[in-house]
Image (cartoon, rainbow, N blue to C red; front, side, top):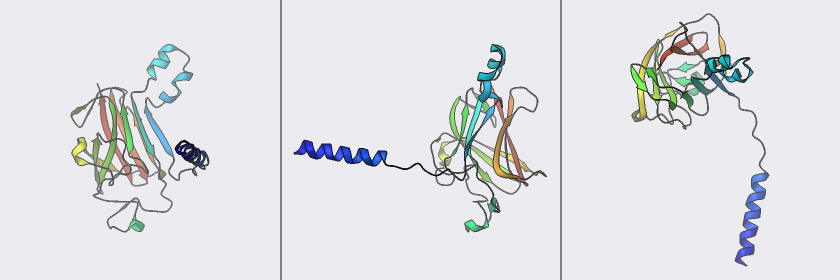
Length: 201
């Protein structure tokens, strides 16, 4: 009798698992930024040398929220006033924490960060952002999961403005001087652009 009940329970659980519907597409789709920027397409390189030159060195995984007529930052606790609050930790995206994958050791803010997976969190103010590189990399949100005691380095970077407005949060990785210094560039709306230098070792 116990065996029959156990088999029935397993069958019931299994049928429920297979009966689950697919979830609807997320409003903030996940995206990836690579350095080099064409690293994801390296399999299409024509020569081995070109393929080697496109080996990924940094990857950022993040979800891209849209403005949809909203302000980005607010000074109040009312979420209708903006997406995230100035002075509070923010995940630099939506849903899961934004992930920084270093394929090589790197210097960030004068500190050596070993190759590995990390999260990026910022604490924004109007004219500068404090960037936290954190060892917790499977959290949800920014202010929900950010544990300051797990910060490996914090760096304050200036915020600049741009005439081009970006509806979706955007992240890019590029080397301004084509050397081992890579800038992690964050942009959103028409008013916020910020760059974090990462020096590959």
